[in-house]
Image (cartoon, rainbow, N blue to C red; front, side):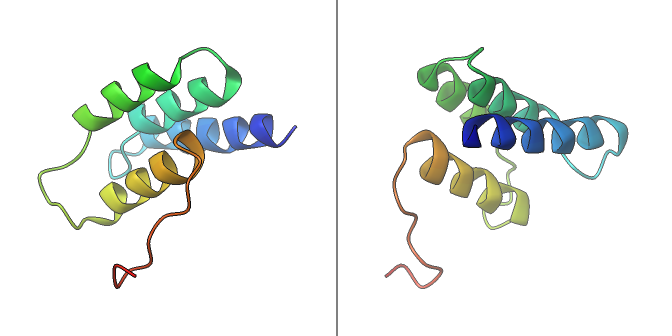
Length: 83
């Protein structure tokens, strides 16, 4: 049940990202496809690495990294200070 709620949440963000250009929509659509079971973990990781911006510390990149670590790899991300 929790998995489908995450899928629905990221699907909504992905649709908003397709409509409004300031949010990248494709990464969130890929994450929602993973939560709905359409994509494997390996494909999501491979595709998500292509969508990272050149600005390493942008908020979108940090959010994508957080989602990859927390929900795809199922590990606890490090805090902002690296500890």
